Amino acid sequence: MARTRFISKSTTSEDTFPWIAISLIAGICVHLAIALPYVYTLNVWSDEASSLFTTSKGLLATIDTVFANEKQAPLYFLLLSVWRSINESVFFARILSIIAALSAIYCFSVLVQRFVTERAAAIATFLFAVHPFVIWASLEIRVYAFVILVTCLLLEAYFRGFADLGTRRSTDCDNEKSRSKYQVGFAVIGIVGVYLHYYVGFLLVGGLAALIATGRYREARRYLVLLTSAGLLILPLFIMVFFQFEQRSSIPQENKTLLDGVRTVWRHFLFFVLPTELFLDTGTSIVSTIRLWIVRIWLVATVLFFAVGRFSKVNRDMVTVGTFAATVAVFFCVANLLVGPELLAQRHASVYFVPIVLLAITAIDISIPKYLLWFPVLVFMVFSSYSVLTMYPENAKRGDWIRVARYLEQHEMTDQPVVIFDAFDVPAIKTHYNGKNEILPDSGYFDFFLEGKLGTAEAFRSQIEFIIGKVPPEARHIWLITHEKCSYGNSCRPLEDFVEDNFVVLTDQAFYKERVRLLERRK
Image (cartoon, rainbow, N blue to C red; front, top):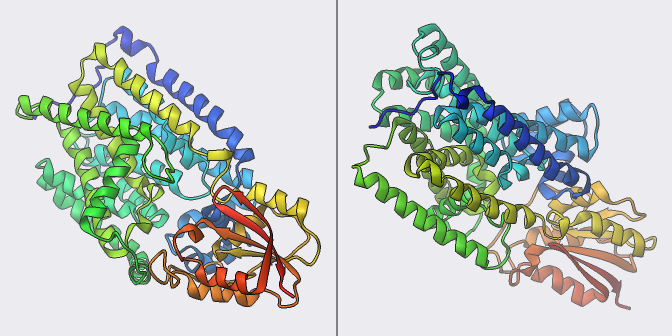
C-alpha cells in the first residue's frame, strides 16, 4: 500500500493561508442562506409532525410514549423534548437540526484533513456544507443531522484511537494514554449513536472489519473487547429492535430480495456522490440519467487507474473508509431481506453518507492530477445546485399541509368534519390548521401498518374501516383528505367504495401529495 498522505506542517504558503477556516465559513454561510428561508416557509410532513406530537407533553411523557409512537431509538426525541421546553415552535425545533448540521460540517472539516492536503480538504469542506443531503437533514425535525454529526465524530475518534493514520500521527497515535482516551471516546460516541439511530451500530461493526482489513490485529482484539463492553450498554435497545423488526418483517412487501437491496444501496451511493433529485416521483429524469453515466465512467476510470499500478496507490485511508462503507452496505442488504425497502429510504442511509463521501474524495484526490481537480468540483456544483432547486417541489414538503390548511380555512363551514387518510397524517395537518372543524380520526395515529400488498384492497383495510367508523353519521358534509398511497391501484378501494355509496363529491382539489374533497351525504 502507498504511504498515507499527511498534511505537511512546514511553513509553506499553503499552510500559512487559512484555507480550511475560509472554506468552513463560506460553506456555513451558503448553507444557512439556503436553509434558513425554508425553516420559516416549509410545512411539516408526517414524520416531522410525529416528532412534534411525541415530544409535545414534556420529557416524562416522551419517555413513556417514544417507543410506542416512534418505534425507533429514543435519544433524539428525548433531546428534542428538552429543547422544545424552551420554545414549542416549528422554527425552534428545526433550529436544533441546523445546529447539528453545522456541527457536522465543522467536524467533517477536521476529519477530512486526515485524507487529503489542506487545499483539497478546504474544497471538500465547502462541498460537504452545500451537499443537498446535509441541507435537507438540517431542515428535518428528525434525527438525521445528528446521525451525520455522530458519524463524523465516530470516525475521528476511531482514527485517533485505533488507526495509525492522520495529521496527528506523531502526537496522538504514539501516545498510549491519548490513544486509550480516544478509544473510550469512540465507545461512548458509539453508544450514544446507537441510542440516536439503530443503524449507527453498523458503523461499530465496520470499525472492527476495517482493523482486520488493514492488518491491525492487535488493535482489532482490543476493539472487540471494547465493542463487547459497549454492547452490554446497548442491550436494552437490542430487545426493542428485535420486536420492532419482527413486527416490520410481517408486513407484506415486494422487493425483499438481495438484488433489490443492492439496487437500493446503489441509488444511495449515486445520490451521495453526485446528487440529483432527492425525491423522484415518476420514472428517471434526464439529469439523473446523465448523472448515472458520469458516475459509471468515473468508477471504471478510477478502478483502471488503481489497477494499472496494481493497486499500490490504494492507501490505508481508502481501505478503512471503504470497509466502513462496505459494512454498512452489507447490513442494508440484509435489512432489505428482513423488512423490505421501507426502512432503507434515502433518509435512513445517513450512516452511509460520510464514509461514501470520504471514499470518493480520497479516490479523486489520488487519481486526478491537481490541475484537473476543478473539473469534478464544477460537475458536483452543477448537479448539487440542480438537486437543491428540485428538493422541494412547489416549495413544500410532502403533504403541502400549510396550503391544505389555508384552503380548508377559506372554504369550510361549521359542522364539516375533516377526515384524513392515513391517520399518521393527522398530527401534520393539526400543526398548521386553525379552522373551525374537528380533525378525524382523533386517535390511532401510530397504530397501523401496511396490511397487504400495496395496490390491493387489503393494503390498508383495517385502517380504512377504523377511519370510516370515526365519520359522524349525522354530518351532512365532510372534507376528505387522502394520501398519495391512494394513487396506487386499489389501495384505497374500501374508502372509495364508502364515498361512492354514501356521498356526492362537490369539490376536488389536488395538492402536493394530497387530495382534498368536499363531500355531501346522499339523501
